Length: 209
Image (cartoon, rainbow, N blue to C red; front, side, top):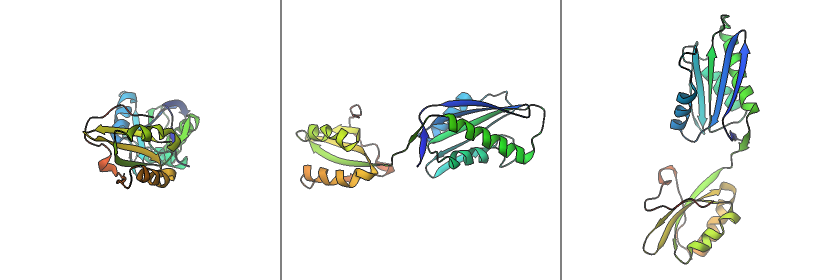
């Protein structure tokens, strides 16, 4: 079961007089992770080491610690607890006692894992985005069924005959919802949108949830 954090969380850990302050947060994009790191990092700390994962994409950063002893253990803490869409930064203040490579791996990884364990987490439900055009008469019928489908309307772009909609549907329900939509649309096309088609052009209203 893949999970993400519900909200930001923080925890302090002391290892041989070094303070390891961990901040973890849910993220949706790499830019959001970098903004989070910039907001919580401490410039005068000894090290600000971090990692993030979003699906198959990830990055880690040792910030001056020996290679592979900080960022990678943080990433391993994310992965070992089956987290996704999460960013973790560990801020270290050196306490005067060297930990060695193995000690650093255990300290950074352990601090990150402990912080993630204490945070409130939620299961990530795989979603699929569908796009289609509905006439003005059909639009309220579709929108009235969103709750039944556990769907979120992400965009609604009006034209002279109706609106082009994009809906986020739980992947497990997508096939059934597509069949219903094609029946309502009397054979009109229902497309599965890829990442390049997430934002449809036109005037958009507020999302309906």
